[in-house]
Length: 209
Picture 1 (spheres, helix red, strand yellow):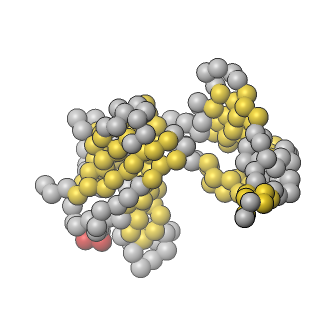
Picture 2: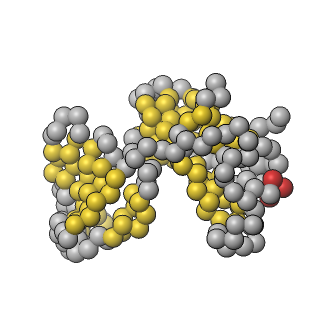
């Protein structure tokens, strides 16, 4: 069976860069190589990438899709349909054009771990991600808890985060004002007045001021 490679690169815990190889031909699986480039071992850190299944697969659902590690052990993952060929995303009979794969990857420092996405394998038993990220909202802001840390956004603050609390140590890091320098002159912005949750699932939280 011929497999093509899709790259996912880890740089720092909060930032991930992903590059893709040329078009994927009709194949029932796809190698996902997760490469650590910052010199820090990663344990079950969420990686995600958009993947374009070939139209020839006529893949209309993800009921039998799953991610496996090199030894073919299934990995808990979240697979979402992003778009379909010549149809709206809600048209379930149309082939999937883009899907988003999110899963926890474990990679040693400066090493590469290979995972494999199976598009339609009857032996797949999809394992959903545990509740790795929670989002709670109150009148003054939003708290995003990743398990490793809690990020507070809002409270009329001028910074990116009003505070960050590290879970294992209990220490709290207070945010600073966000500024931009143009021709040597610094500029700020008004206090944050409102925050909205644009997307919240088991692997991602997206907010918008």
